[in-house]
Length: 435
Image (cartoon, rainbow, N blue to C red; front, side):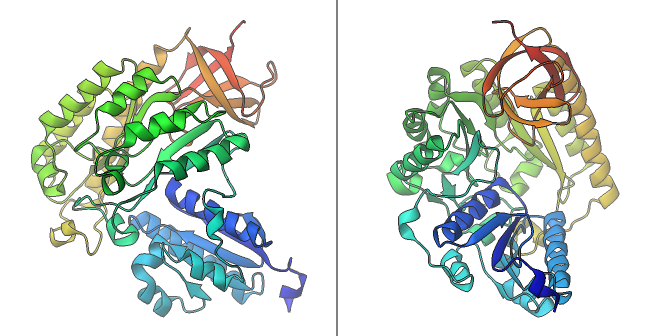
């Protein structure tokens, strides 16, 4: 019995997928710690909880492979129990129970009390806002809402996360205060849709009011917006961004496509003209704002002409940040009734073309930063470099600022003024500015 050599009752939480899953894992870990359980994130433990993603084909495949890997470790006696939670098991629980029966139990996205029970812990309601963060100490994700009411044809998130539910402002301020007391300086606001925030609770889009309240939390110095939806965007948010120095001049607004024909089929509720006007209003209201977006290529019926329209628009808009995905044909979505008629190699070729275009745009925009000084937050030391970010960059997805650690000393979690000396497509190099 090799299990006897294992560290007893140490729970290893493994997180796959997006920042919303990171947040959910942190809440789970906070609950376990409050129950006096030994809990680690992606380290060795004899009990494993896998928080899965079920968004698109690649993510599902990674989740299934991870489950199979830990089931194999269980068979070999290297772990004792394997539990699965998150989006994949919310969406495919009956199939998973049938196909991978050696998992001890499957739980959905709203099953936290039952998961805790299976781990020998109680759900503690008084822990609202308490969690065990897994990100570097200087930033944390703040999930302001769960679920989504949008009807996008390609998206399975409402199937896995349910309807939109906003978290009250006072709860979020409380959570931000707890994080600030632990040394968090940057809050990254996440939700399936920030734009919708408050409609269910306050009968109006209330993101601007939330931002003002969070800006009042002592110790928080940057607040960053992720995942806004273009239709119905509350324009008063731009006023707060302009007036309140703590709100980063940055927004992540997934636009997905720009051909009117494709946007209509995607059920995005907007047009090329409206989207372009919205982005121009953003840049007019907040000059120098960094706009990040994501696009989908290879959607059913996407012609060469639709793709050329998209390419021309990417060239015209010159986004500071852009990611591109190939379309994934997801069962039970509206688009699943359409023929997935763009061949895989064509999808991939189109994604590559968009990213090549963006690399050139990013390189040109980065060259303009040389000689300029930016306030940067230092996330970590990696190899011979301290790695930081400007307010225009989010962790893991955007530019990083690299400072030679053999010549300069900086402290993780601190802000530093850095002068950019050279730049590549997605990295900036700099030196501390003279005081």
